[in-house]
Image 1 (cartoon, rainbow, N blue to C red):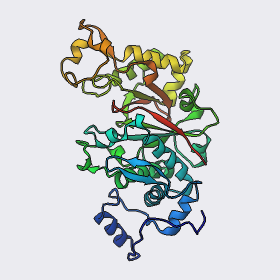
Image 2 (cartoon, helix red, strand yellow; image 1 turned 45 degrees about the vertical axis):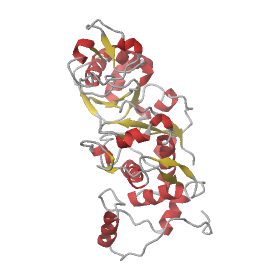
Image 3 (cartoon, one colour; image 1 turned 30 degrees about the vertical axis):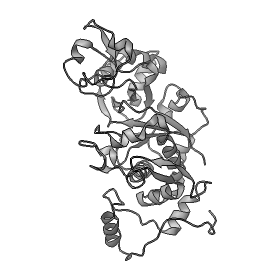
Image 4 (cartoon, one colour; image 1 turned 30 degrees about the horizontal axis):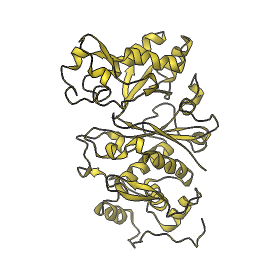
Length: 354
């Protein structure tokens, strides 16, 4: 980035101590509550140099505060979160995806439901920047995952204006509102990668955003067949208190298979499509059970579901097999995870532009 390009953000002079800097950022509500890296002009310019974009280009107005998400503002927050410049193309692509109307970022930001944008990075660029997909992939210990997820949360706070109790109305929230980023384990994936299943080329590097609850564990140390493992996954998908299926007709679910479960399923001859169809056909609940509580009474179902009178008919959690996304991530161990969405948001994927 040319040094002649002027930055629009104002500067402040602060004592050069971590305590003074953190206190100032907390006082002005510019942090997520954790210590920040001071976004000096040199650091911001270094971040901006990772993308060939005008710093004043706006990707759109970010809800619920509806402030302009300029490239410069994204870079400032990426510095604060501890990102390396090489992570910045991922952050830009993720914000572009979140601002797609199909994702419904306003709903994700403002709902009482405990959801956050889950960022899934796929392709060669995930490996280039050191994104982690192995043991503990949803947890700590890996800078790219931790700081990319954190940067997006700080952007949602500072640019979007979604603060707990003011803009972000989540009743309880969830830990993944601090950071929620992961890579797909392509070496352990027995099928095409998720981005290819979503219509992108194998050579593309992509970011997929998914308005998500935290991962719900599927523990299966016994099953030796695809049907056994997926039956347990479907059980975790279908709970009376879940938003998915029982409330809005835009529901989607993400199935994150651990490598051992994925290998067992593939040995049974199942394709990705077979996994989706199995879950679509088995992750169901009888109408008589749904009427016991949960979201019944304020649900928004398609006409064909509302017309059903037989209380023993088992209703699906999503409208089609394609609404169950499947990926592989994690390390050794016979665990997988179901990640429900927030029912009014759709998955969006964007290419990473270097």
